[in-house]
Image (cartoon, rainbow, N blue to C red):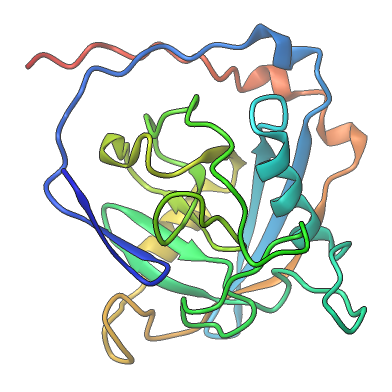
Length: 226
């Protein structure tokens, strides 16, 4: 299905079920991987921690953009740290995804990147939206990546070749599911009624990296019969 795009939001129409290819990479088991985390609050109350692994072996530029917004290494024009700490998930759709990353305006209209521009190109579409818990870039069309991202809660193959997958949840998917279940619509379409906030975020230490082999990326993907 074609994705109807409005601003930095995407509204997929009817999904088309397609056979999902196996995407394996043994290289990653010896490659340096980045682990980052979000500590989430809902209505000011702690919800829990989400830990992500970033696929910097496949999409290094996209992964580094996200990592720096997690650590605060990125600086704005005034030289102040800029990033996800204190920002909201402004758009949540049950059975689809949770979208955040607009730390400029908080409503899906703001975006920037670490590369001295407001947007950067689609790095590649090698990784597919074939499982829940994937990190992918929100955009306003081709080559408009910035700071906004989403976390899938189901496989979303209709977004393949339109959005760049760059990481996945390795711990805290229960937190993502609680975020997904929060009520929306009172303040605006798909907008959570209570603030879903990244209260703290950052990069995990080396000790968290060593068990990445417990989460191999090339999980068996059964062919879905037509």
